[in-house]
Image (tube, rainbow, N blue to C red; front, side, top):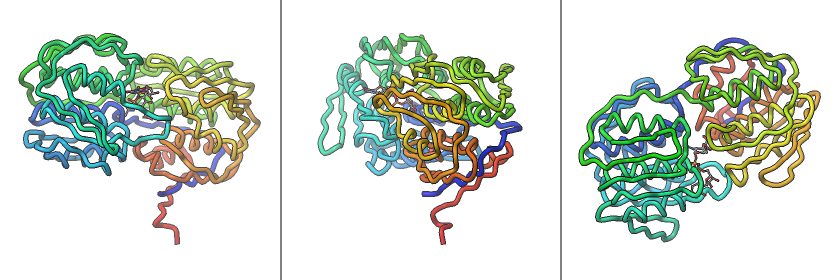
Length: 423
Ligand code: EPZ
């Protein structure tokens, strides 16, 4: 467990290039199990969650080659449909291997996934869909065992547009018998990217990125090459960091239309934003004005994965902002840590809180409790007076490649002290 040491109150200036999307590469890596062939994935982010997915693929029998940001997965020799708990528990998205294993091997055995502490994080929508498609599912001592003679296509309406459940059902339906129609499904760009990859390997999918997706089962799939789309949450995080420090940053390798809601908020707060098809230039005044209300919603609404970072930005902006987190039942672990830095935030309940901007925050010793909450603490540290220690760097390393190099390149005095460095 390392800690970031950040000297604050420095305007971010310069250019940062966004990496491939964590939340796109993880389901696509799981999907490579389906075709029993060679998959060349380019622009993959080099983060710990990618490594965990690679470890899972190797465990079940895939041959993997990696070179820079390209991962080559040969799934022809996959023979194991069980994933050990120590791998599953490392990240929430390990659950996404269930669909591909079940449809290809008629069996999948995993423990309940781990991941960020954002509430219970149930998988009932995943399991009820698999049962409807013909799977038998038992749960004993935290181990979930799924088996089926075959999976049959059917109509599934999700109670909530769950990203993971949408992805898992698509992956289970690609080789199922007949047609599956998912209604009220998630529309995130990462779903669209998964559908693009699956179509390349021969799946028959219509409606990716809309609230109704139709998958017609096929019998055979083929090899493919795919480039992972840019990480809109990484890009949005750097936009918010630039805004928090009154900086001027050019963000490259990004799809601005994936961040139009964030750009709208930051413009209303006082930033100047210019875009081209693959870049965003953000210029911020030294002090922003809060907008009255921010509510997270499924795409294309305000992403829940940027709520913690926006909380930190709001804490150093003039006026007040009320937040409502509607996606997760508890995404407020960053608030107590921000209070240690002098933020003025009052929690109404686990999903609603009000931020009152303060003249400045002060460096402190704080701890990241989850990935995006950790990014929020770094955001606050960049603006704060003095030095901040952000502990539990492992959470942040799950989703931000080269964050020390990137922030140093923007003029920030930041170092990562690994626990082994402690004398
Ligand atoms: C994905 O998580 C992302 N993770 C999350 O990003 C993101 O916050 C989330 O989607 C929402 O956009 C990956 O893609 C790896 P959900 P996922 O299923 O699929 C409830 C990050 O920081 N739910 O859309 O787990 C659930 O409890 C991470 O990069 C059920 O009730 O999210 C939650 O309240 C954090 N039953 C809501 O739906 C289910 O069976 C949204 O969850 C499944 C979900």
